[in-house]
Length: 522
Image (tube, rainbow, N blue to C red):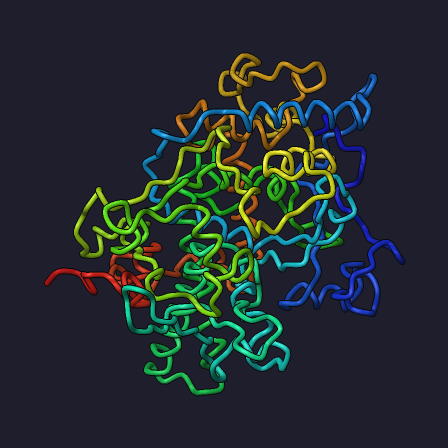
């Protein structure tokens, strides 16, 4: 948390500042030369983190020391972590959107900072933010480094489950994984290993794999030549993914303050830099889009076996354990068939022909400051800090914002033009701290704003998120915002111009592979 930023809008890397084995040997990327310009259009560029509001400058007067601010942020962490359990705090949003949000976050941002107070990691992000699904495709099947992700020249690889105690058969319904003989036994063979961090995000990634493969089949039947199958299907999937973000995900989450940018598709505040090009706003990646942990439930009605009326609902420990990135897949190299997800319990599929049964559905938790779920205490949690007081999600997010030099929420609200009547009061914010009062950490304000708004995002968060995602989509080589005639063409409601996650799951034939209802009623 800072009230200011006296750094430039970009962290410009220079000789010797960053030493990372994944960086190209040619030196610092994005330096304005022809090679850097070309790299921005590929799946390999190393994009910069920057600021949406570089105009917020150093305020006059005494600044608190780093040590003082860290101490008060850790006190705030303790206050948040001591809040009550999440019983009775469900929203009306289906729980699948929690993990769709995580999938989107992994698609557009990735830094390698391990310690939350390490500011060096802010300089470079290892993910193209163009909404080009490089988290799904990597460099493509033609690149020998990434052919392991593909089953042929166009289709992505799918993994097979192993028989479980109850479902004594296998399904092609797991991520592809390293097998026996590999030092990475059970690890997912996907471009972004974070998409196997927990079972819900892993099954979300798998749904996109299956959708891609169905789209390949569709474009093949339409007469597209074999050497164009992959690129044609990829373009279709990227555009349908953009549609889901703009027409399904964001409208369910955002405040009316963001309606204009969603309607026009033209950001006011987030624009590519004329010299450096596209960048990832820290206000988005370090603060506004880190609301998702607050939506995580302690238990899920997972499928017709793993539920409160059967073997027991799936706990957060379960969904981390049954992954290859954070867990051990129950000490087996592949997922058990008993743990294949039933998406009817995570999205509303009633409009695509499936029966409604609220007893089985999971709702996301309301977005608020009630972080009672100690995810960092789960075995296999991937973020271990040297100082254990910095390890909780709350501490990591607060300290990361401070280390990144984020402006305080009050300054951002003023810059955006949020009316005084729509801003949180000191009483609503509820911080009793001499250095944080009226200098509210942006991430904490985002959560408090939602808490006051009955668990839905408020105006500051909504503007930052909408501006960023709309801006990134607009800069995509396949942007649907630059083609006003674009309409979805896959899924049961494509003729109506509707395509949501429910439609993707139906088209991918991925709704409930092991359930008692394998399709919509006749």
